[in-house]
Image (cartoon, rainbow, N blue to C red; front, top):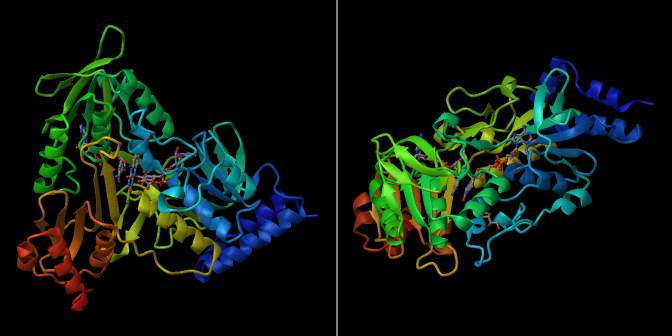
Length: 488
Ligand SMILES: Cc1cc2nc3c(=O)[nH]c(=O)nc-3n(C[C@H](O)[C@H](O)[C@H](O)COP(=O)(O)OP(=O)(O)OC[C@H]3O[C@@H](n4cnc5c(N)ncnc54)[C@H](O)[C@@H]3O)c2cc1C
Ligand SMILES: NC(=O)c1ccc[n+]([C@@H]2O[C@H](COP(=O)([O-])OP(=O)(O)OC[C@H]3O[C@@H](n4cnc5c(N)ncnc54)[C@H](O)[C@@H]3O)[C@@H](O)[C@H]2O)c1
Ligand SMILES: O=C1O[C@H]([C@@H](O)CO)C(O)=C1O
């Protein structure tokens, strides 16, 4: 009888066979893996080492990938997820939204927001993984990888041999150096539930909160701190919040709202050091200009870095970081894929390599990759960038805000609306093509127009858009330019 080990040695065939499989496309891969599964099943199931499909990372993308494996009937006894976290995949966006609601305002908690509820799908609890025959190794991160022998080593010392491997290790929060106080008690970073729990426990007794960074985390956490009625200051090096996406004029509208909620802004400033009080906990931040901001709770949101270790040998993109993949999420190593935040992929519609650190891409890349792996699909991933946020959502807030952006924020901008409550920004290139569109407080019908616009890139008349007195008018003008047919 063939042993499971033999099964995998026949699977890890010569580079020439692999190349043939790659050329022949995904179906060949699928057949090979099915064969290897049958042999190992005949040998009495997987032994302690061999796994047919292994996903490393148990985050957002992994949860959606697992769902696609199940949809194809290819999970049961074949799929293993190796996770650093103690819980099954969840919708990470909740951590700086519902999770940070004040304790008396029904904050979100697990198991409420396991994937795939964020996109209206099933809530995949630990039982769901068990029922579907998916092995999940919790709190046991992969620490070493050997592509030649197709093995992974976990921190507890497990050796896992894989048939196909999906890397979905996501990002980690960038940190302030320890020598300037980046690790002091009371200094928080937010990437996972443990981080959010630690922040919630600090907020419970906080008086003065300092948020460092004016990006997504900064905006969402500063708004959350308002919900706890805390004295909140936000500091960042740029001239306005959300510099990666917002125009100065758009940013001003949001900054005004934060100020009305009592948030103080310190712009154009960098942190020199964080200092501890006599109890060892952070007590203040010293800025580069020498000024001092008192704070007992500091939240650092200064960006994120793709987690490529221990997979560097698979191929890291030098420009955008992350594991480089093709339009089917295949890395340069046959049988190894990368998805989600960590994947540097061809952003087809803009003809560039990109990493996208947002949940919509995590979900869609996971689905596309697994479809490629399990079916004969060879359709290139053609992603339309989509970002969103929601803040001041807690019950009792004087004004909830929610926005969506689709496309590319390049070219000139036209802004319409006064934030009462709507505002829209259109990005238009030198050929008058609409490249990107932002909308605050839209209806679901209005929001559903945005991807159509950003995808088709219709030619629009800037002066007409501007003349449209209301957001509704401007959207209607953009919609009619879609129908006029001058789109890409
Ligand atoms: C607080 C927060 C709020 C966000 N809000 C939004 C939002 O509102 N909208 C939006 O579009 N996007 C949002 N994002 C971004 C979105 O959550 C990410 O794009 C998405 O989670 C990416 O999915 P992923 O699976 O690639 O990575 P992750 O979800 O980060 O999952 C990666 C997983 O891999 C694990 N891991 C890492 N290394 C190893 C290893 N060696 N072995 C095993 N496991 C490992 C990690 O612990 C983690 O569990 C938010 C992100 C954060 C942090
Ligand atoms: N709604 C969403 O899509 C959402 C929400 C939360 C988090 N996220 C994701 O989580 C990750 C982390 O978010 P983030 O807000 O930390 O990153 P970000 O890139 O959005 O913002 C980083 C901000 O940090 C500031 N900054 C950079 N270096 C600094 C320094 N040395 N000192 C002080 N400030 C500095 C800048 O103001 C910059 O805007 C990203 O991948 C992001 O996409 C997304
Ligand atoms: O995509 C998301 O998922 C979570 C939540 O909806 C899950 O319940 C959240 O806050 C998002 O923005």
